[in-house]
Structures are given as C-alpha cells and as structure tokens.
Image 1 (tube, chains in turn cyan, green):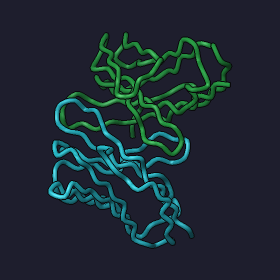
Image 2 (tube, rainbow over the protein chains, first blue to last red; image 1 turned 90 degrees about the vertical axis):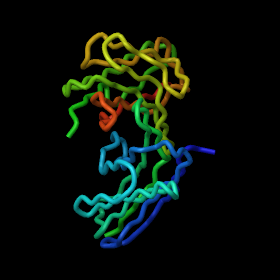
Image 3 (cartoon, one colour; image 1 turned 135 degrees about the horizontal axis):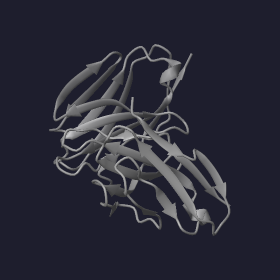
Image 4 (cartoon, helix red, strand yellow; image 1 turned 45 degrees about the vertical axis):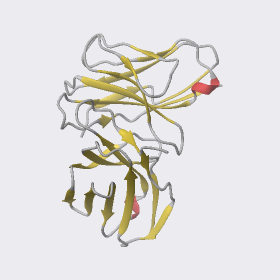
Length: 111
Length: 113
C-alpha cells in the first residue's frame, strides 16, 4: 500500500464549477501538507502549504486537512480553463524534509 | 517565485553517452534534491543534499551520481546513458528548518535512444 493515495483522474468539469481534489495517507506522523500544480512538461509549482489540521484559503483555492481521518482536500472555486493541470498532493513529517507525493490528479476545465 | 534553473530542458542522446544535468539556485538554500518522474507517474526522490559536500541517495535507486561543491549548484551525472534512463528529472531546493517548503525547477526531459 502506498503512503499517499490520490485518484489519477482525469477529472473533467465545466468552467465555473467547484472542484474538489483529495488525498488520503497512512502515516500519522505527517505534519506538513502541500498542494502543487504541474502543467505539462513543467516543474511542480507550490500552490498551498498547511501545517497540521485545519483550513487555509488563498483566493479561489482552499486547502483542508483532517488528520483524524488522514485526509486532505483542495477546493478550487470558479474553476477556469487555465486551472487545467495535474494537481499533486505532498506531505512530510518534521525533521528531514523528504516529501512523499501522490500520483497527481489530472484536471480538465472546459470553456 | 522560485529561482531554480535547470539545463538542458530537453536532451536526446545516444546509448552509452555521458550526461550531466545542471541545476542552480540563487536563493541560498542549503538543501537540494533530484526527483525523477515518468509521464503520469509520481515523483521519486533519487538524490538529496543537506549542504556543501553532503550527498545522499533517495528512495528510488538510480545509476546517476551527484555532487555539491557549491551551495548553489547540484549537478546530476549519468556516466553511460541507457534507454531505461529516459525520464523527466526535476531539481528542487529548500531552506533549512522544519517549516520550509520545497521549490522545483522546470525539469530536464531526457530521452536516450
């Protein structure tokens, strides 16, 4: 079993939809949770960074962490075609900063 | 925005050739990393460095080697390329400290024919 599970998609939505992307994990020691956006043939770009449980909002993006369920989410409001990309969740514990990544969910937002 | 640069971005090379993928960062970050990513697959850590003269192997076994002679520079070398080395190689860096995030370069796409 992988430490981090993420549905690879693709997830297809119309422009303006609310998108929910999710990851589950098995290691209860994870404390730092990140979402990266990766366009085709580009490096991952950090979108959201959360420590421990709770919510964090940045513009159209909201990250949620539920440590009791070992479940994290990224919500995208008013989705745009430019949001079409692969979204990777990543997480790590304290100490060494090795990130464990999900496989990524490919999102397609149609005009 | 992260200032981390990788060259070449794209490389097609014959089997048996020696390759060096360059990575430089201008942020003064102590920690640097190399990840390997096949299309549609997750990232795998192949090398990391805590600082100058420090290098360690990551989770995924790799025939590549790295060096860290200067803080800003973390090149990856393949002595004899094989088709199985065809992949995307992503360099990343982060500051020291438990709360710091990792920033990635644009990636180097390697094709060995």
